[in-house]
Image (cartoon, rainbow, N blue to C red; front, side, top):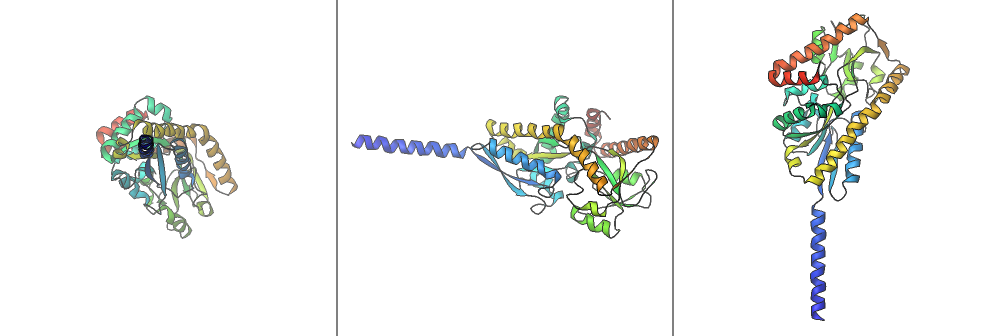
Length: 323
């Protein structure tokens, strides 16, 4: 009888130990987004989190802390670098102070699947490893372009006399075309436009309505230029601390996330253009010669700026970009 009880007791401890070991295998990462929660450039990241939490049950989970109310956008890069958070949804424009080369990512507009095949992804990951102590998990919205939005109509690509709200994405081209760059937090743009502190702003084709800027925007300048890049970064120490199964859940979800761009962005862009037209945002169009000159200028000044700050890596990124 005593032997049977002992065996039962030992079995119970073994089972409890096995269960504890199994539960200990599940890791939880802390995540933030540099954009307001629920807005266009956070939505797919939030879908990514849901997928990881579903597919990674018992293996890996993500605790979503939130957006700019948790960490200001321009501090997110450093938060990932220093492991204040483990994973972040952030554009390179918000961490050029830590990685000047990040200003080049907007100029690389090849599909992400091609970037993974031709060495672009690997080199950008290497830069993140070295300069941001992070692993470059995914890039989103590569097929979504940028525009300059204005409240004053112009008849040629000349921003002389105009004050335009910028991030590092647009600063060089705004200055090259005679405009005065204005820097404000995204939350202050509406008021700046309403009060005439800014005559316009740079922003992607998507997301204007999320921020309510349609109410204070009259024109959208054509042609579109550059390419949106919103990256998913994982702190490098956190990434190295994961086991193969945990990394696989994240990597599989990253490829799924990049696939959304290929399958959904074209429709989103088309619908957004129609929505802006209905809201009264008018297109400013130039001659083909003027448009071509604008695009050449936009890319030339941006690459010149990147290469001036980071000669070796800037030239390598341009060669990979092929423009």
